[in-house]
Length: 114
Length: 112
Image (cartoon, rainbow over all chains, first blue to last red; front, side, top):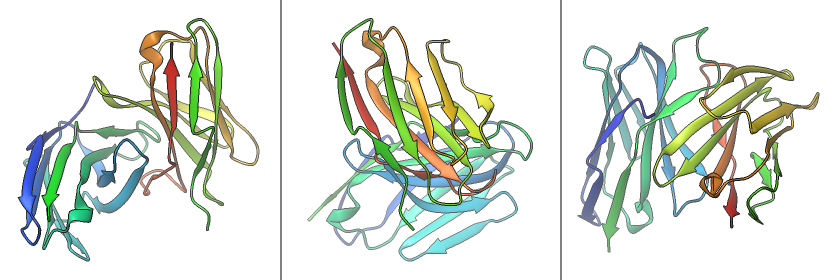
């Protein structure tokens, strides 16, 4: 079963606009990771944010984490057609539990129109 | 460094057969995790191996098994295939728990 919920399930925007995706989860975590997947291929790692961090940036990506609300958001600025993909959040449980297991949300399908 | 590799990339099997999928982790990574992705259930954790030991297992029937070799390469086996086993099987490697998991391209299994 999926731990998290992602919102929205689908997002359609124009090139140059910003895209925001939200993720909620249920249990205590060690870190939260965001991944991108193109057309049923492998997952590409985007960013990892640890439970003691509140915000992280990587290029055009900005991730926030609110552990009190058990939620995270991914912002993609100045989107490009090449950003069209499915985006997943995945949580890694606390140290010493649930080894090697990431629990994924159901994903957000992002479509960026040229 | 080379990324995670998975072989084969595509497989077609019939019900009742068995299948073995292979995963080579990034050099130096000792943890290998396997996931199943289907349209209905999404991404689900199968199991994780570290230093040839299974440390964690997801909620899958015993037909799903795996192993890890001393060079950290891992295989998973599915016996007595069912139609519902059709999925994209992904493996991921990481150095230690809590670290980034890097995924391979996946093996697309179709069961007829």
